[in-house]
Each structure stands twice: as C-alpha cells, then as structure tokens.
Amino acid sequence: MAGVWLDRATERLSRPNATEAIGQVCGVVVLAGSVIFGIVTGGHAEAFGQGLLRVVDGAAASSGLRITSVEISGNEVLDDEAIVDTAGLLPGVSLIGIDANRARDRLQALPWVASARVQKFFPDTLSIDVVERVPFAVWQHDGQFHIIDRTGVLLRPASVDQLPELPVVVGAGAADSAANLIAELLRHPAVARHVIAGVRIADRRWSLHLDNGIEIKLPEQGMEHALSRLSKLANEGDILRRDLKTIDLRIAGRVFVLPREETGDKTSAKEARS
Image 1 (cartoon, rainbow, N blue to C red):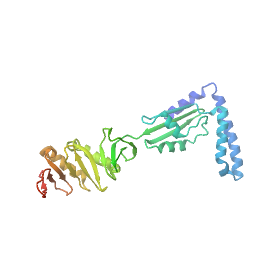
Image 2: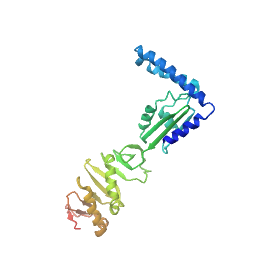
Image 3: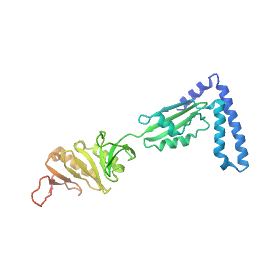
Image 4: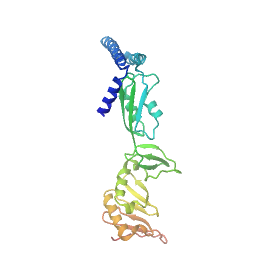
C-alpha cells in the first residue's frame, strides 16, 4: 500500500502545476496556523473552531485544492453516490475541509459496511475503500424477514415471496446464534440437506424443521454431539426418511422418536437405537 501511495505522490509531483499546488498547500497551512495560534492564546478555540474550519476550507478551495477526483472501491451493493453522500462530500469542498476519520465512521455506521478507509492524496484526490458485509442467512422474527450477516447484523428487509437461497433462522436470539448452528450443520451434510429452518427456542436451544415435516429437538448443551449422533442414524438407519413427527435429542445419549400418526388421545415416544 505504501508503494502505491508513493507512486501516486511521485506522479502528482511530476505534474506541471505540482510545485504551484505545494506552494498553495503551504500557504494555507501557514495561514491556518497563524489564525489558530491567535484564537487559542485568546481563549476562543471552542467558539471559533467550526468557523475557522470553514474559513480554512474555503481558502484551500479557492487556492486550487478543491477535490476533483474521488476514487471508490470495494462496493458492490452500495452505489457510489450513496457512499459520497454518507461520507459528507459537499460540492466545492477541499481536502483540508474533509475529516477522514469522521467520514470513515459515518460509512461504517451503514448496515452494509463492515469497515471503511478514507485517505487524502494532495492536492485533489480522495480515496474511499469499503468492505461490505456478506449476506449469510434470513432471519424471521415477529412476522418480518431480514437478511443478516454472520454476526447477526441486519442488512435489509427480505420479501417472503422472494427469499434468497440462504439458510432461514427463526425467533428471538436466532440472528446472533445462527453462525454457530450453521457451522455445525455444515459438518453433517446428511442432516443439513433436509433442513429448511432452524427455530430458536427461548433463546436457549434450537429445533430444526426438515423438508419432510420432521422436527428435530436439539439440546441446550452438547448440540454438536447430538447432531453427530443424528447424522450417524441418518447414514446407517435412514431415520430421516421415516414417517416421524419429532426426533428428540434433548437428553444426552438418548434419541426419542414420535411417529407422525397417533390414534386416540394417547401419544407414545420410542427410543431409537443406533
């Protein structure tokens, strides 16, 4: 990165007006320093801080330091105009008038932006690089659907009629816990291929809903061991293809199944043997 900056600086210094631009920068800096010294020694810094910045910015712009090039990279979802507006780039502003840290913070406050970098290249170029969050899952809660990233940050609403091909998690706390569940499911493809949604129960444990209507009740602790056992039963005993209503794994070392069809008012749970 330092090499790129040095190449840009060298190229700009070789321009015919580079010496003039450097002189303008120095002049503005000297002028600003003199004014700041007078205000600070006079005890008026807080009152005149913002006004001084506008004066210096105006002087810099008038001296030819107005931003003429904004280089934006890393954005696929956000358009350039939204990035420029969020960064606070007003028409006619100079590089001196841009607070790079503040512009970065404003960009990072956008839901889609994981990180941002704002750099000044005198005399007239501002560089903005953003890293966007990656859609990870669909979170359903209180009847609403949202696209989330792997940390649970809400990126945008999702239409129930046009849900993307992403895992679906449901319930309070599901967004924050989705990454752990999905990581465990990816280790057990025999189970994962049948899962249509993971439902967070009281923000303590998960229940999985399969494409054939079976509900898998996972334990609060030891979810990874329960899924390993279920995966073994799926591969060796074809348990996920049986006509079952629920498979209960909440008791460590035990697997209870409930048939889909029950007669009368009685229900019976049977323990599956691996």
